[in-house]
Image (cartoon, rainbow, N blue to C red):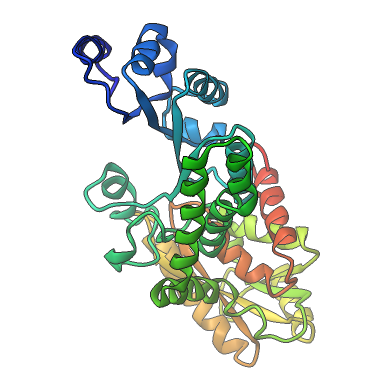
Length: 379
């Protein structure tokens, strides 16, 4: 609404001069508050509320989204809108490659702390025809987990985030909304005598309850949970020694897996197919020594190989098939590999759940391993 400030000011002056000032609202940017004259005209023309795309409080996500705002600008916009008695509906996008579970919790706390009047958390959703879909998802550099278009509404996780599982993103978003639209949030407004937003927050709480009552929504969340926890209890006792194809450990994704398992206290045994001509003596000896101690075998599933890398991944698939035959009685856990994509958390979590049921410990191990391998700067 305020993108063309000159035109916007003319419109607001015209409304004021003609006494056409019903309560109104509009979608605006955070930098609107940097123009005092515009802000005062909005107040004088009876602006009641604004819908502001804050997007994220995570600096890394804002940089990824190429946003010109930072946390200080977001806080300043909230303060100045409220100082002019203009209410705020804050709009956040969650689930970027830089977001994690802590981001969701922190965003809900931020919204309550700064008394944003109402909020919406929309899960990042790749839409066919959008730049992200055309440049990433459609080419397979990243992948969606569901192509039921009825779930592409911003309220269902349909893609693989990097730093948490789809189930954690789904549940974390719901819990963050519940924390905001809670009895505490409702009474926060009631204590200030703000009956309008007391009702809005109560209505938000009710809508969340209705969302959960929907059988399709409930089934979708159960499906996401099954994707994460499906194999976690299948092996019985926690695993302590895991066999991994030696060929996979030559790749960055395999090295990250080895580091990750090491962080969890698991011994990784490189396995070479008996018939491999280039299997080193050390690898063959490790394989022989591990026969009585291995708890399970990681079996890479190559979902996509980049151009020029087809031969390597064909060889990896062949070696994996040979190892499965060689270790046919050993329990297996699948590990999807999408060449060129980089790591995503869920496959690591699925293996980690064979070791411990503590997702926080698994997440910490994943972050620490990524830092150690130089894949990201900070945990």
